[in-house]
Image 1 (spheres, rainbow, N blue to C red):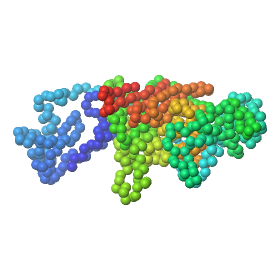
Image 2 (image 1 turned 180 degrees about the vertical axis):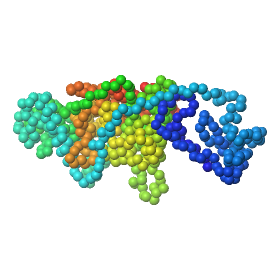
Image 3 (image 1 turned 60 degrees about the vertical axis):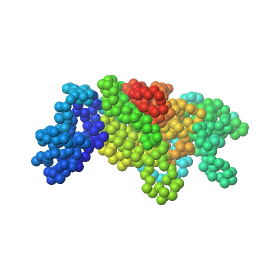
Image 4 (image 1 turned 45 degrees about the horizontal axis):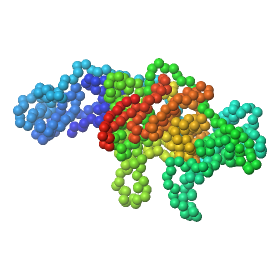
Length: 564
């Protein structure tokens, strides 16, 4: 039996004919023994309908419906002739392609170029360090209370906020705890915000037998004019009023406030401060352009079939099989690809299996199985040419609470054989050629969007950087592991590239800190709906979108665009 090579191996193997191609790190799968033994060959003579064709030096198998086996030589190899026996005297080692070359010339019989096209070497990553060890969970214990993570968050962030408050309001302003406040005495206080929201979903309120309330409808925003802000520390809490934007702030943010306690027991806020952008390492100087491709929201297993064409165009661009020589030389400068979560679609989550009887779903295959197989094939094509970091997302098969652990390697039997494929956590942090990357799959930004008046993803990213915390709403409205002594979501070092995945549209922005920090904010669009990815230049920290528009049956005028 003749086994054909897989599609992934065919893509990984270098081209034997002309045409430029980015060299890959993949090793082609060796061909199995090509021919049967003499005994089996004679038994199958006259009935076997397989032929051997030689195309540019590589052996492939093709089924020819108009031919049959006519002779088996001593080595067990078949020679072939048409069914009308007009070419019965063929040499034993003659190949089908050689006889096809003697026929009349057609449009498909053009000669191959004598010279091979140029080959572009992939620019390797000079240095790489995965800095996501703080997001990796060792022993998982869920018998702790979540009060510990708020206490450790306040304890870790208090020193930086005290220093920031003295710089802003003067060293003579006392920094007091809430239990030390005196009426009408101006001072500064530091604590954790709690936002009391009437529209915030509450499972206890919905199942309450006393109220008999219907479940609340899903909302894009849960903010309301009646919301209240409360500041609390280790011992006490106090309501806030005055010059403070109640609608913008969210639960879990640690801030400093300047003001005084009033007769009504509320704290009148006159000004506030945050920990601001943390210190940053100096950006290395480089004279070579290297790029990192950021992609999120592949949505495999969904109903949008048009995105699959755009996804294949993206793979062909990265591997150097798309565009002219200029574009292929630019694609060779992509030193790394980061897949920022939601690799699978929301449709792959079959919730009916939890509500139906087991005998009704006994022989039903989960929708995520085929999507994972498709993802494995995609990772094989990418990892064969470039290093890939694969982050999980909200709809991917891993733990739901943050930080999400890497996808299990057993789900990718083909891709894990490549050392260039790396399964990482969400959030993800790494140094690529001296450039610090920090980002998430977008759950933290989407959650803040629901409970704050901020509508722009870049604005939310910048705000989380200034308060020094990746996900302040965890664990209040966003699932989080109950950390005990350390909060890993505190931003202790300013990154050079700060990104979030699965945004509704592409946006980027460069900001500068008070201490000379310079960083790039990137909102990576969801690829399944926008068919866009992002290219980040490691030398200049510039970012540009790459669009892969696919064919759509709903449009009268269809255009395919691969541009950036």
